[in-house]
Length: 112
Image 1: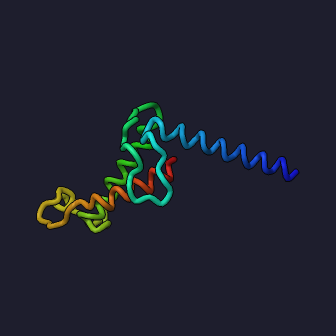
Image 2 (image 1 turned 135 degrees about the vertical axis):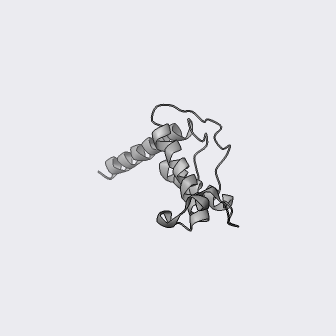
């Protein structure tokens, strides 16, 4: 029984490993590292628009961009954001690329 639970745990680890690789290969190529604030490896080296990736992986990354933009130019308050705010006019705000990359890194890890 201890052997069977150990075997089951090992099978689960192997299953997770193969799923991680199956998700990473057609998107980022290398798996995203847990806790990383930077994108791992060669970014989008394996970029493919296979069925399901646009609606899941790339949709999530696009949402990261929009969320970061709204935070930087509208203070995160979508309801009070004007068209001028969204266009970045009349403001000294700028897009926080470092925060965006961290956001994408965290999201990519969760996706894989």
